[in-house]
Length: 125
Image (cartoon, rainbow, N blue to C red; front, side, top):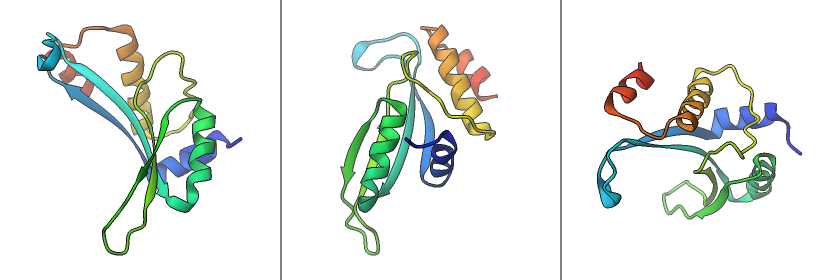
């Protein structure tokens, strides 16, 4: 099994944490903002075994094949975690601000079902 330090390092070089705000309305007619938290990691095709070990580390997520037709680029695999909940064993420890913010977003979202515009301002400041 991979160590948390290894996961932090490879994420720093090849991965990202993102938070997407989804405005009210949409197909379901919601009245509050919804936030989607994602973790992405993309590696070359021959590194698939590493992504499988990372998926085992977290105990969740999906691996997708991503064909690349651009010159001087190779086909890749992309590992994603799109749904975070209390059941996910989020074991990374890092000093980076982005991971601290991301973990804070996750904790905040677990405790609130409704997200208003004023809440977005507070989260981003």
